[in-house]
Amino acid sequence: MIRSYCRGLSLVFALWLVTNGITVAAAAPTADWSEPLQLLGREIAPGTRSKFPFSPDRSFEASYFNIPVFVARGQTPGPTLCLAAGVHGDELNGVEVARRAFARVNPKELRGTLIVLPIINAEGFRSGNRYLPDRRDLNRAFPGSTGGSVARLIAHAIFTNVVSRCDALVDLHTASNQRTNLPQVRADLSDPAIRELAIHFGTGIVVGGSGPDGSLRGETAKAGIPAIIYEAGEPFRFQEDEIERGLHGVENVMAYLEMTEQVDREIPDNRVYQHSRWIRTTTGKGGFFFPTAEPGDIVRKGVSLGKIVDPLTDVSFEVISPIAGEIVGMAVPQPVLSGYALFHVAWHDPD
Image: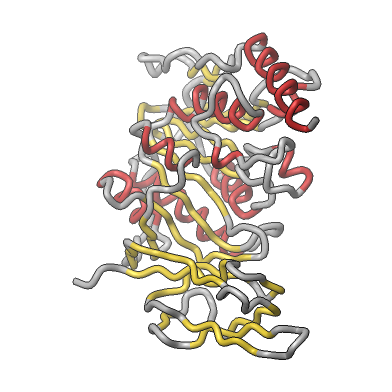
């Protein structure tokens, strides 16, 4: 019954997209910078900024595209940077990073174009849900398609009409539910352009990896557009320190791309980690999780990171690190079952 409903909804939604011209890429970028930028049926003149909905339609189906779009068109030519946030509806820090970054841009002093999609999963954001109404993860649906799930349809429209127009992308995230992340950038270190983008973001920690198939960052990079992720903090709340670090990182990237002037901004030395893995609850040793280690701790192989107590038998199990490295993410204290991801540890190859 549910599958039939979703298939029917996808067909209706696809018809709505075609009817409203959303599945077709917007007009090609204007070669003459003095002409307005054409994006999603809107015109943004040089030296101006604009906020508008992804689609102006107000039908039932259009509610899935109730996505705000912010655009600042610089007075002079330059690259196009895309900021994406809210792909997961419960991750709030990135949404505020995107909002503040756009609010601080003066288009009359900007070189190039800043396009911000601050709340991509608008339905999930309003309801505090990580996923879309069809219970799919939007960050596994890119670059999308004109058929299939609602997630793939939304991903296709965003990727085709906006992301493909950009020269670089920064995707803003937090940890998933009941976890927290040390502020970090994740990037495909095998790509020199992406590596430089990650280092110039300036968080001090870069974790290597190309990203999962279907992720916005991974599929954008496959399309030849340098893309990185900023991960910081917990879901469901705004955290000022993580927001400010993200804001400074975005401004660092804009200065690196020569979209703005660099003003007394120093990029810290980065700890670049080529590898990372999760330490998980040992099979048969679930219970109440009480960590003693914290994000940012440098740990040695064989040390205890905390304990898990079986609440029915009172038996306690030590969580022993099988590797040495830095804790860049972890679960908060909570009940855990076998296989649950507890600590995300990153390390680099020896010199």
